[in-house]
Image (cartoon, rainbow over all chains, first blue to last red; front, side):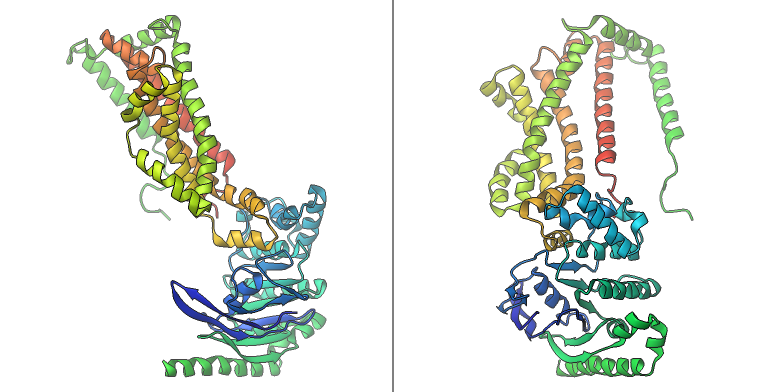
Length: 260
Length: 261
């Protein structure tokens, strides 16, 4: 769906090579996870896909249409929830529908069904600031899903959560993914999270940002089927692959510091 | 755990005690004639003057006429200043051209004391209501416009990006995200503007008016009716307090999320 992006980003006059000819194809229904240390260009890649950043060269296409600027067919879940505090939870979820001109009643119905999907139906009329961090991220996911986007872009959405909430959120996200069948592009710097969630994993490296390794995974399909996260994470192939990926990330870091 | 500083502990009893001490000192000083009676009336005389002002008015106008003349001026000017200042300030926050154009006159006249250009207003607009309302509008416009502009600047990029990725048009973005995000700052600016407007109003009425609380204080002072001057100052204080209380209530009602996220 998404192919061949090539470009440079400049900041304070100094050109920064944030992404170097990154090519990526996200198949229908895939869950692609981008992994890398901070500054490796994974957020840049997501921002370009969302349309927040212009490309210097190359192109991003979605369903055959080139991407220019942000749009409702690409839902974004942010690191910080970015909910609007003057609206109730349900109104926040329905925001995209309001922009699209959907009537009040239909908006409310759709918002409630999405809140049911993320397990927050009884908080529909609460203010966002009355919810915990994990709950707010769930509202963020429901809000991004509301306009029925073709793809969900998630920028380290669980990065600020404690590890227990984080695991619960990962399982919830897999549920949402398997029930809606959306393509997901997900950014993280946690190797375990990447392995557990993705059907495809790309490992990125900074200066200039590029993809250094690609893996096809199947842990998430196994979880969607058996719903046993512990069995997956303790099965021998999980830590094995985790160590391989870690070696790639670290090797790359050592190589870079040696070069500097 | 006890926090640093005074925390949430109430200061109300201390404040009441302070007020009692001040009034007692006033009463003591005036009764004992420590100050010539002409300069300092007793509390009782001030109360009597207030009652007489309430019943019979002063300087060819009833108390209500004086107060309503002042309120009319400040409320009209506030309405005009908000109607102009909020959109212009938002526009200044959004567009480089708008900021460039409006910054020049605002930065030039805003630091001036409004009374400095009151004579010019009178030459241009006459001695009537128009000159006073124009003066107040100018004094109140700048803080409101500057606050609205700062409010736009405080909108987080993430909120804007979130709205854009949900398909917001420019107008929807402005109405649903930018304006509510800027509202706390706009209200703070309006509160400052009302304070500025109130002090400008009283000063303008001291100089040029036939009605209004400022004029009442001025004409009482010309007859050395110190007790009536005291009453006038008290009425001004009450009005200013009511305004600031009203703004606080408005803030609580319009932006209950302030400081929450």
